[in-house]
Image (cartoon, rainbow, N blue to C red; front, top):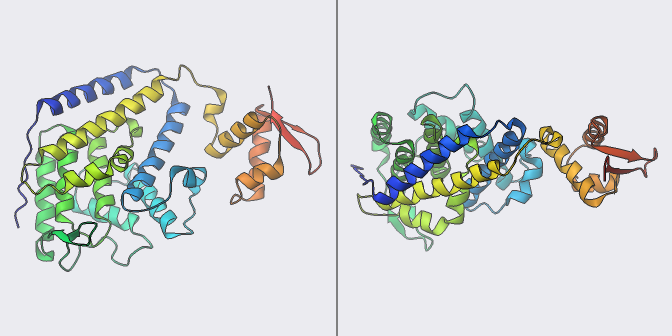
Length: 331
């Protein structure tokens, strides 16, 4: 089964690519704001995990998980899906990640995102599959199992050898990978992760501040519409993909540019930062109120967070009994 897809670089795509390069340059010229950037990056990575899962039907929202982001417990299947994607993203960002796109990379990512969800980790499907619409009608038959290795290898070679811009290669890979559909489940999540990998390898990840998945989830109907193109010319999907990357990059660079300088609290760990914001917002807060807000966090950890906030001059403690209250150091 041949998957000979092509695309044209339209004037719209050219303009989007030019604007992306302008934003890349603008990002390099911004003054260093390491703590602010790290906080924005942490939120962007969590967004990528949550929205990628939501595209596949997961119902959790950002506010459901962001308070436990980097200690995300997997009590439910939906939380496990998000935690798995987050682990895969961190692996992609580590020194253990292969420098070049390969079938091994795809299988490793599948192992991460489907851990605890299937026994077929990192294995291409052994039987025929199909892509169904919402009515349950098969609308596309991907290559048979016997052709998967060759189909994936052809796709990888084409992307690795291509001289096109990173966003174009990323879009092309994502579309064709979903048509190959090499795994029984998890193809969408793997495809989006590899697209992000290609963007990073080609310098278009904007220092991990961009969540393309947020755009794809917000435009889910259009996303699936363009993914289901039956023509060999996939220019509409490429245009949609590059436009989305530009929209998200503009938001990310804009958010970073709004901050003129770092504040002391920008260096705080996420939970301590949120505790400080609660105390500043309410002016006077009891320990029990904070504990209720972070009911899944051990009491000893909350006590330690509060002690650190007091030690570094962010808050004050009024009283010495269990009824003590916490207030901002300056009101």
